[in-house]
Length: 456
Image 1 (cartoon, helix red, strand yellow):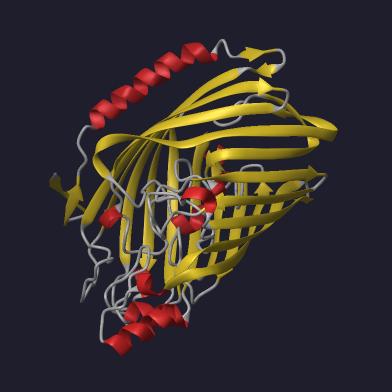
Image 2 (tube, rainbow, N blue to C red):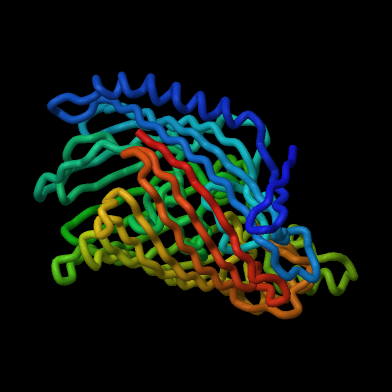
């Protein structure tokens, strides 16, 4: 079902999912029922069970831009898309230090061009699959065990996927089940939540972090964290999808990823900050890009990465910084690099990335619950990936059919999140993308978005 509207003088063609009103009504009903249950959840020993929820609606549009040719994975000009999701977070205390969480979620809608056309994709709310009708998923189902070691007791505020209570400064945390690698690794308080801060994939995560996931961004696995003073060490093993960019995880964990991370917390002039080093090693059936091109040229056939897939590894690493500059102002930065001659497996087609930005709360203009952000991103790919795309190869998100004039993908994003109510925000977002999909022949493109987010 499609419809058109006029935006800034341009005709926008938008894929419009049906049933949105039913999804909103369901979200409101769930919130009303959960509010009563939440009042009974707390005891003197911390929460025994918890009910939280969220609802997010995003509408995104592209402006007109130069596009002399169009490929299977190209971004379209003057187009639009909508996504809607509603989630419940149900948590329960199991035994000392242990809690279990389950998150049923209803999704609906599509990303721009079915989530194709830009490596730094402009909406973290858009998955690699979509439907017109609402559909039910189970993104998270996990158990977390915390073992207190020593140190000062810290108060833990109740939140989605976290029971309110207390924990020691030094501790071991083990998480097992289904969740997102991004729940634990490469986190950042200023740029990591597409429902609350930046939209762009390469802003909310390091663009080179090809983390294990299904097409929605979730996986099964286990992670361990050791907090000791100002340091934290993390390690985890997670299931890859059965083939790259698949909706199904590999049965039996035959294809997997190992993640490790070192975090150091510090203070500079009384302002807190964190520095993280994250490393991943994926082991699965992946193709070499130069081999795929060579085989295709020798056979006189189109490039087919699946024809050269063999069991091999792909390494990558990124460094992430978050730093408070003032009580209402923070800065973030990420730098990442990943192996450039191996096909990307789960996330997006980025071999190197640099991203940095600012997040400012609105206390200075008497809107303390408002937030505005500004970020700049530069993504790049290897020479082997440039040749692969120029030969007609397709990546996870990009592939214009040819790439005679490659260039770095440059993105600027800014947003303003307005607190309509204490638990409801309306955000306006603008992104400017130069060389979308690394193609100097296409763009630049302006991308506009509006987001409505509520949570309890």
